[in-house]
Length: 137
Image (cartoon, rainbow, N blue to C red; front, side, top):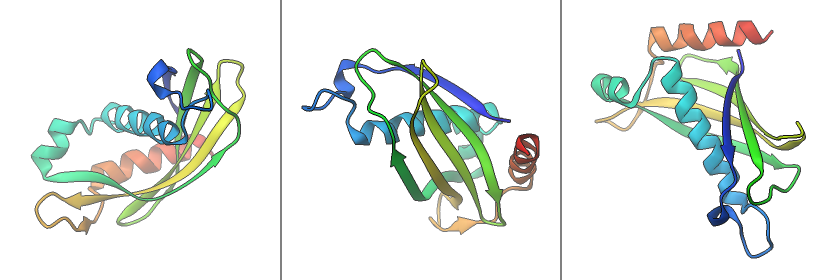
């Protein structure tokens, strides 16, 4: 199932060219990822209780359309693949007119908060991710 996260471009997101700075697209995606994983039941408190932290290990983004101040944007997040230690999600930014502004494939792992090393995905998270992926197919 695709998760949707809505936002409005702020004046502080604009660069000297007059459009959203490229780094802000990544920030929008980060906000959406955090909201998405919390809605799956893996809140910050729950992850800390388990001693886990989600970490981006690879991100490939395509910028397709510029965004401007006060524009409404929707970030859509869906699961593409689930492995033993990692998962891949696709995130897409759309304008209010449903035009694709950017898309990215993001590979994430869970790391142990003490060792700072990737660990096997918790079984309940892996199940959630696989179910979400099946709903997309």
